[in-house]
Amino acid sequence: MTAKSEKKPQEEPMSLGQMLYSWLQAVVPVVVGVVLIFTFLGRVTIVDGGSMLPTLNNGDRMLVWSLGYEPKQGDIVVLTKEFEEVHGPIVKRVIAVAGQTVDINYATGEVSVDGQVLDESYILEPMEQQYWQEIDHITVPEGQIFVMGDNRNISNDSRNPALGTVDTRYVLGKTCMVIWPLR
Image (tube, rainbow, N blue to C red; front, side, top):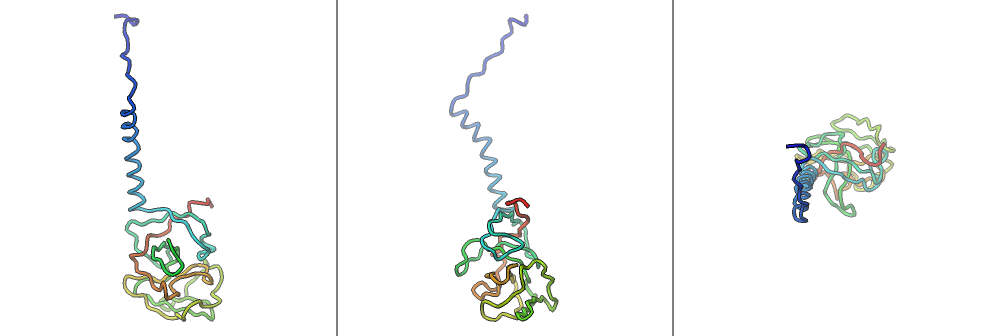
């Protein structure tokens, strides 16, 4: 046989059904993977409000890690518990976990956990006043956390009896990083 006499068989064009099936084979696993990742590993949450200034700004988009997360003192967490006029995810800092005792001195603006004054270089400004009934001493119950915003003077947090200590079942996860805007 010579090179001229060899002919490649021509492929027939794919039908619309074949193209659709081929496309679905590529897209469906990707969509399922993304859904599984955002359901079990983490998700993106948007900060709504200024209660976490200066650490987080209104409108920041954060990656939240969920898988196997247990709240720890100092972590910034996203809560799903709704209360009063706050609807949707709540972003706060964990001040204390189960069994720890929180003392708040409104005169000095200091917060202590188990007798140790917290080094809170992250807060926007010292607490000027309390917004709700005076909560100055509380031991966090089992399965609960005590949370506060970094902008203490405008934060709806565990000092508000409507929220109080938060059941850990309401913790969506820990913030890992701000993904937008880029910093």
